Amino acid sequence: MRKLQQLAMISLLFVAPLAREEPAIVIRAGMLLDGKGGVQRGVSIVVQGSKIVKLSSQTSSPTYDLRTLTILPGLIDTHVHISYHFGQDGRASNRGETPAQEAFYAAENAYLTLMAGFTTVQSVGAAADVPLREAIARGTLPGPQILTSIRTLNENSGTPDQLRELVRKLKTEGADVVKIFASKSIRDGGAQTMTDEQLIAVCGEAKAQGLRTMVHAHAAGAIKAAVHAGCGQIEHGVFVDDESLKLMAERGVYFDPNIGLVIQNYLRNKSRFLGIGNYTEEGFAQMEKAIALNNALIKKAVATPGLKLVLGTDAVAGAHGRNADELIARVREGGQKPLDAITSATSLAAKSLNLENNIGTLAPGFEADLIAVDGDPMRDITALTRVVFVMKSGKVYKNVR
Ligand SMILES: [Zn+2]
Image 1 (cartoon, helix red, strand yellow):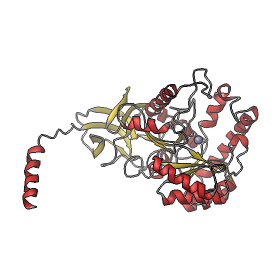
Image 2: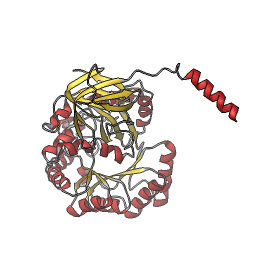
Image 3: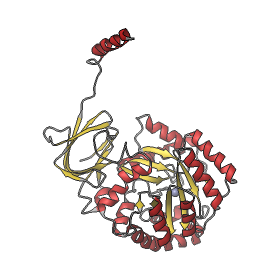
Image 4: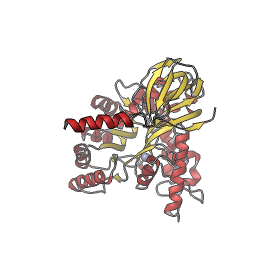
């Protein structure tokens, strides 16, 4: 045994100097927002391989001199549909498309999202997310790190026992999260659809399997049922009331209202959606009403003590790459403090994904996912739409200073 150890030591002595260490990259920041509410000036970030190794006060001869810019962690969107796109006829129905065509549209969305400064997204509801997740993880195709639910579960997915079985199946298929529809679409009124028993089955089994859960819910009753069932995150919540906001805060459930991008995008692109499924004139009328409801809801949500407001946009066709619009609206309409909005899209979003030790914070040991924006987002939140530098896992994907 001793001999083996000695041999190992000797071989290390010979191998170590030969092991090629990548040279460190030093990025000089003007202002640095660490993703946890901290603000620093006059620092440089030292990156080795895919990781941040230190923040240093050394400012001479950086690899990238970004002293006129604000550096922050790569942004995280916890709710997108990365494959949704307008097809060759300009419509969202994508009729007659081949899988190869679909794959390239999804890759385009991934590219747009990364260029907008989003280095991680959670995509909820498409099996096509899996090969895209793997392709990007191979390190050549530019795109954000992708987490996916692969499919979605709803009131028609089965009995409580069947639902538990489906959750276990998702686990073996490599799902990162379980996406659940507990209420109707906002275009159909948003009432609760799944029974309390179904919700308890899904969220209980997911917890047992170590899977996170996120729940589409509009009606206050559906939100409360999902929280009581032990689900982890609530999406949309157009009809949320004070009681359900308080309940989410008390139970530490993440809340992701989508007030600044998705509905505006539907209205902007009405002709591309109209006539598909529930995208009817009546459905659009419901969405127009939802804008005012959303503006009222975000004010109440921001004012709810202890509520974990996390960034998610529900980005669909036409919205990819405009994800930061959601943050702008939360600040402008909801009165959220810009630094809190940034935290909701960085360290808090990372925590909602159980990735708080890997991403969402600029500190030694974290993944080198960082962006630089032109301007001070604390004074002007729209600076988040002026992303001029993107590094993901230590690799620079954008540098357009
Ligand atoms: Zn969605």
